[in-house]
Length: 238
Image (cartoon, rainbow, N blue to C red):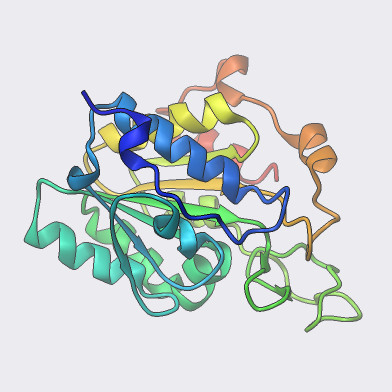
């Protein structure tokens, strides 16, 4: 029987105290054994960024690729070994910025990848530059007077391109995150799971208090997950 202990390693994460990555890491260690996956059944593929450190803190197969390039690497791995669960772990900069082209083509190919985007709305590893999902007006080291670019809407983009699984969760909604990852693991095809998270160092405007005011479970309000038009409307709420 697979347990959480099978995934543990004695390595201390270098993330800031309060970073949402801790919760995502713990969620992975909980869900993977719950669905019966042993470490040898899974590979985590990463690019560059704080999220890309995730496989360092688990006993699991891992491949650390170039910035923005984990999706083509993951595609090659999946095509070579159909039995592996291939999970991509990267941030909004890696996934939607440098890797934006691969994001689109992964949706189009619909190969069985689980694409987990840790979205903290900044480039956190490189000291907080604004990213494709940064809110308009966000002041960062590269936008001292506020970002003048409109943020990308990745969920709406994914839906418009025909993505067959699109979900969003929040790093401190532990149970909901687990349910979304479980569903993504069961999906046949490309699955996008975007996890909104805080960056306590470089994006304090979007704090836990901010998310508590804005986050809610759409399925508790009767949302039909098979209705693409309704999903698109929800994607534009945030």
